[in-house]
Length: 204
Image (cartoon, rainbow, N blue to C red; front, side, top):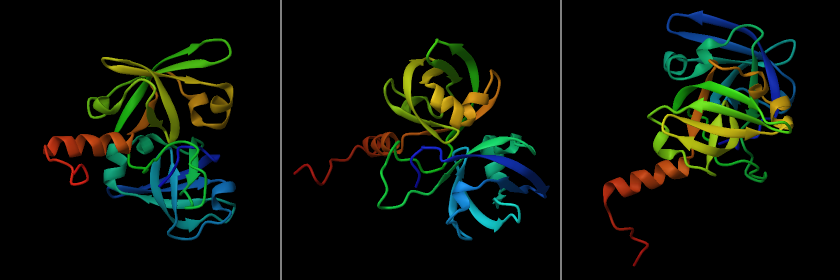
């Protein structure tokens, strides 16, 4: 589990494709300080397993065909910057919101508006995610925990402060760029429960 609070910007060293999958190598420092083989690290919001460490600092992870098809990681190339976050420790503060690292859909940046002291960024809203996106609710964009500012029929907007633009890949995003979206897991659980039409055993 993650929180959507990006710890470090990493740099893609290489993406080696083989068959239907790939191996992603990322140069970084902070997230590998205490990492071990088999640990989970979120890369642009995708939970990946550390399979090797790079001699010059960083880690490698395997990408299945499913991951390449259902996330924006397939668009990464050598030199790409990526958001990195280690899995949440049980005794740590939950600074963002509960994030699983399971991408629900890939969206694209629609518009970027300079509002002076902050920036408004508008994203497309895929049908698979739309039911869970509400104004003032939480959403994860490329692994960054954000608050939804506005929801439109086929888009949503967030407000980004200069710090977020500086320490995450969102500051490098432009219209047309793909981004990974993960909806709030709590909203998905509520929808599932209501769809079953059952009375809660705890309501007695």
